[in-house]
Length: 225
Image (cartoon, rainbow, N blue to C red; front, side, top):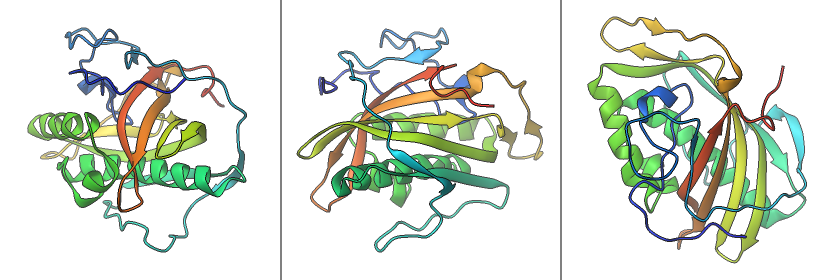
């Protein structure tokens, strides 16, 4: 079943890699102040699908028309390349990967409306991240470390709307104080493995844009050694 497109104020409750603590999103979409292990999109019921074959290497070679990213030297983003055998699904996963990288770049810059964020986010997701990134920057925080994304899958593809999922490994990703440069290290646990499910829409320029999503910490399908 596709994720519904009903507009809800807190439908885009998700926290960035290594930044789950900054997002006070309740799982029922009420915008409460209690931290949760998951952020739900109302009506989300994504069916199971077979995993695509994944290249153990990451996608380092930029494709034609790929976005340019400007990351600080202490931040790396590794995205496992997945090939489904379907060019249309591969296109979705490519842009989902770009969206994940755009998010980390935005936190590093302290700007939720970078060119890449505007290119790969729309709907409720865009203003949500704009606010979260500003709050994080206002707290004298930025990001550092290694951000890893893997297990990318397209769950459903219907014309210009797709649902997808991916895993995130936050064990080597941390927050950092901007003024002092102090790295805010956290103890590693299963909570460092996060599954994200999302809905994306293809725009007139041919880019797939994330418009709403949900996440779950300590997702068993994402835990690895």
